[in-house]
Every structure is written in structure tokens, then in C-alpha cells.
Image 1 (cartoon, helix red, strand yellow):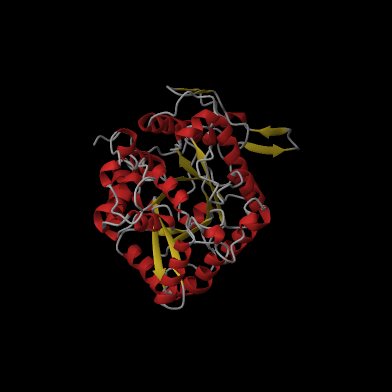
Image 2 (cartoon, rainbow, N blue to C red):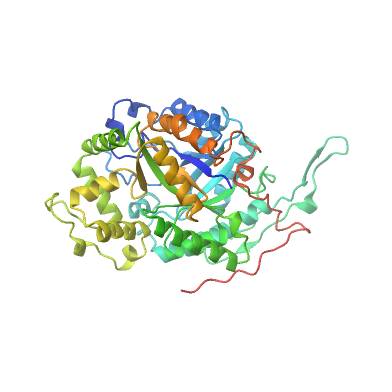
Length: 450
């Protein structure tokens, strides 16, 4: 079985100081040509897809970081026009969107791209987003996931509301659409009331690919029911193996084929010709970090304000609040796991997190990076990876030039595309419309209990 690889494109690169690194191009973070060129190189290398994160609030401390970015669906439509096969995965929130509009947007992207759209489903963790949408407060974790579950139910019905073949467009007979194959969804639930049908016919993939990035208990439950690819963060092989086994078992218990759910941890490769040169490159990037920004990021992840602490003193674990919302935050738990395992100083922890916000950073030669990817894949920890270059465009170029040939020589990555849609790249079936007479429903869904 070969690896599935996405290029996770982050403004300037994934290291928080990437924009300061020589060769980076921070002035181009809103230049569509910059992203089109990255996507074209990723397609040339036959990656499964490109991936864009997003959020409906300015959560970053932009005084010290190049973290502004275009809205993903608009950007991916522009990228679709200059690419032919690479998958196009964009993030959109179920907390701060409407199901009907979002269903139209992703269906349109799937039509525009010829079947390459993927939706990264998030519930939004940034509490400040509420104030951008006229809400008095940010919904709590459990409520956001309850809304997300119903949101996905509605969007799926809308994408299925046109059966295959419903769009006839027969000028001779005068029949444009077979209305017996176009269905109102008449959804009435706790969060949404939507009549349907969608005002766009069924898209090339049937439905865009469902991608999900939460690893909390609620996140795993949502992923087990809906996700077809999962973006996750792990620092150790053991943690990744446990997550991989757990999510596949949950999917199986819900009547799904676990092979149709791809687990893709993030990996940020820092690559050089020798181990020492790679370590020096990593140190050079870390030396460009700015503590005020790093402490702000740590506060976002854990809720801990360490601005008055000695950066070279031990990390004060007791100041991290693990109750309430923080107690179910998967990224907060990941940070505490690093603290418990490595006993770092505050500065050392800040440098550990600077590379990829808790995702695994691999420092070494191209062979070492390839070895680690192969090890995780063969050990049942990953079906592939979201590749997170520490800086752009050079960080991806060295991965493409030096690591991908090794993976290909080992039979671990494709040399050519076998299909033209994101579903085909990921080995996923094209689903039938649930309104089709031939549709085979899954086992009845039951909420899992702890």
C-alpha cells in the first residue's frame, strides 16, 4: 500500500519564524500566483492534494507573524483553473457557516475542478470568532460538535438531493431535468430547518471528500461517523498507533469499512545533506522566533499565561487549566504530554512548538525523513501524511527533490496519477445518492458512549 500525501500550505511556511528566513516570500501571502505555483509543483509531484487551514477570526498575533491568508474556497477556485488533477482541500467551520450556502460553495468547487474538492470540517476553537458573527459568546465544545453532526447530515442530504442522471439537458425533447430524481430534503432538527433541494446538480465526486481534524473525544466520534480523511497531530509513534487503531475501530463499529478512512498525521521535515546541517538549520529557524509571539501561541493552546516567567526555567505545569473547555482540547493535551515526557524549560517548549504547532517535526537527511515516514506507515500509525514544510517555497522544494524520489524507489509513493478526482487519489468510492433506489444505507448510527 502506498502513502497518501497532501501539501499543507501555510502562509510563508509552518515554522512560526518562517517569514523571516532567507528565501521566504512573506510579501506574497496574498498573491494568488504564489499559491498557484506551489499547487502546480505539488501536482507535478503527483501528490494527492493541497490543503488550506482557515478560521473566521484573526487569532494570531500578527505583530510578529505573517499569518494573514486568502479565503480558501475563493483561492482554491483560482488554483483549479491552473491545475488538472491535484485535490483541493479547504477548511470551513460548521459553527460559523450555514449548511445550504456551504453545500453550494463546495459543490461548485467540485464542478469547477472536475471532481477535486475536499472539505476540512472544523468547529472553530477561537472564542473571538463569536464577536465577528453577532454572538454573545462562543459555543462550548460539546455544543459545537452537536451542531457539526447535524450540519453534516444536512449538507450530505443537499449534496445527494440530485441523483445521478437528474440533469438531462435534452434540447430535442425539451427536458432539462428529471424532477423525479430531484428531492426536497425537508430537514427539521435542533439546529437547522432546511427544505432543499440544492440548486446545483450532483457534483463529479457525488460529494466532496470529508476531511476532519479533531482528535478530542467528540472529534473522534464525529470523524468515525463522517470523515474520509483525518488530519491529526502526534509526537510519538505510540500515540499515533493508538489513535489510528481507535479511529478505525470506531468506524468499523458504525458499519463503515475502516480502509475507507485515511489517517494522515502532520509531518514538518527539516532537511539537509547531513544530520548536523539539518540540526543547524532547525536551530537557525528557532533563533528567529520572537518570545512574545511564541508565548501568545502557547497561551492559545493551553490557556497558560507565562509572560512573567523565566523562559529558561522549568515549565510550570500547574498553571495549565485542564478543566472545562481545556480538558477536551486535544492540542492542549499534546502539549502537556511533551512536558511530562521531556521536562523542558519554557524556551525549549516554545521551540518544540514553533516548528508546526504541535505536529511532528523530523530533522535530518532525506533518507532519515523517508525512513520515519515508512516506519510510521508500516507500524499502523498512518495511511499517509500532511506534509508541512517549515518555510516556503524552499522547504517543499527540497522535500520534493530529495525525499519523494526515495519514497518512489521504495514503492511507497506513486509515479503517476491513476485517476483524476480526489476520491480516486485516496482510493475512496464514489457514493450513491441516499435518495437513489440502489442506495445501500450504513448500519443505523448510534452515538458512542465513553
